[in-house]
Length: 95
Image (cartoon, rainbow, N blue to C red; front, side, top):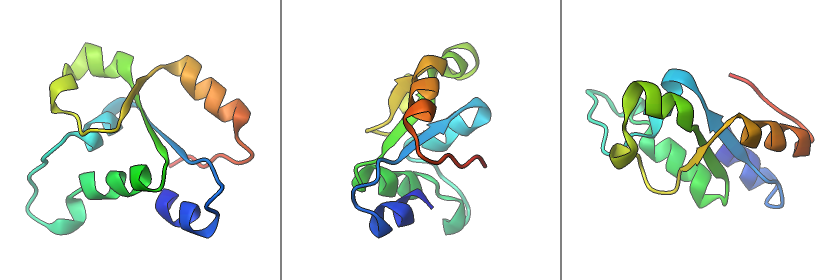
């Protein structure tokens, strides 16, 4: 969705904030049994469209300790960053 939005409106600023177990979606080199489950290429499309991929760092630190395993381009983030992105947004989608 974020990549398609960026294609439709190249001037749009896209930010995706992953929280809770979703931070594991940005783990580099995931091995899955089927292509549709490979999340890294989907997230890379966001970054290739100049989007931001924000990761809730407190969750990463407490539960996963996965910094070294995360894909390139993601940004460790916090609730202040989410609040700032939300206030700056014209629209917000939550999944």
